[in-house]
Amino acid sequence: MCPSEGGAVTISDLGSFDRALHIAHMVLGGIFPFWRGHGNFDWPLTAEVFRTGPRGKAHPEVTLIRTFMAQAESRSQRCPAYSDFVGWLMLARHFGLPTRLLDWSMSPLVALFFAVGERHDDVDGALWALSPGRLNERMIGQNRVLLVDDPEVMELVKLAFVPDQSVHDEAKPRTTGRALAIGAREIDPRVMVQQGAFTIHGDGIDLAAIPPQPHQTPPLVVGFRVERSAKPALRQLLERYGITRGALFPDLGSLADELKHKPWSG
View 1 (cartoon, rainbow, N blue to C red):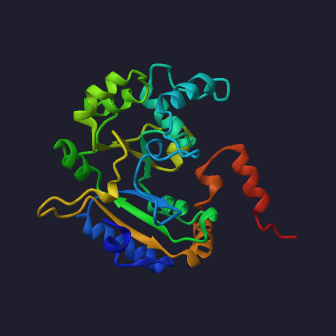
View 2 (spheres, one colour; view 1 turned 180 degrees about the horizontal axis):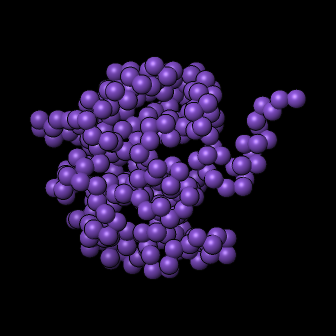
C-alpha cells in the first residue's frame, strides 16, 4: 500500500500529523504500530543490504558485518559477545551499516524526525506505520512480535554471517519473500532513546508492495506523505518537543553539534 492510498492526509503541520496518527490507529485496528520515517517518499520499505550499493553493485553482506565485528571493539566499549549475532546486527544497523534489519520505532515522533531530515528538503517524505503482529501472522502464522531467539528469526540472523552460498541456497524456500517483526534489545543508548524495533528480511522484499490477501482487513502497513515545504517547520516543532539529533543520537559529537547550533541569547 503506497502512502497516498493509505494515508488520506498529507502531513504538513501538527494538526495533520495528529490526524495521520488517528487514521493509522483506526486503519490498523487499534494496535500499537511500528513507525518509520523516510526522507524521500519514493524509498521502498526494503532492508538496506538488499538495495543497490553506492557503486551500483550488491552489498557484500557477510563481508560488511564480519569486518564491522573485527574492527568495532577497538572503537567501542559496548560491543556484544562475539557469538551474539543478533546483538551485532542491531548494533551495526543503528550505526548505519547496511544489514538485513530495517529499523523502526515505537514512537511516531521519532519516525517523523527521520522523515523531515534536512538532507531531503527537495522531495516529499513519508511516515509509515506497520502492524507487526499481522506481518508475522501473514509470514509464519503467529500474530505476535517475535523474540530475537525464536527459531524463524535466528535462521535469518545467522544467514547474515555465513559466507557459504550453499547454506543460503538451502534456506531459500523458507526465506524468500519473508520479513518478520521483532523486538529490539537495548544494546546501545541509541536503541533505547529511539525506542527501537526491527523487521528482519530474508531478501529484498518491499513491505509496502506486499499484495493484500483476499478480504484482508486491516492492512499490514499504512503510509502518509510528508509535504516537502513543511519539513523545516516540522523540524522546529520537533525541536520544541525535545526530539532533536542530540536526543536521539546521545554521543559527544551530536551534543557538540547541537550546542553549536543553538540560538544562544547574548
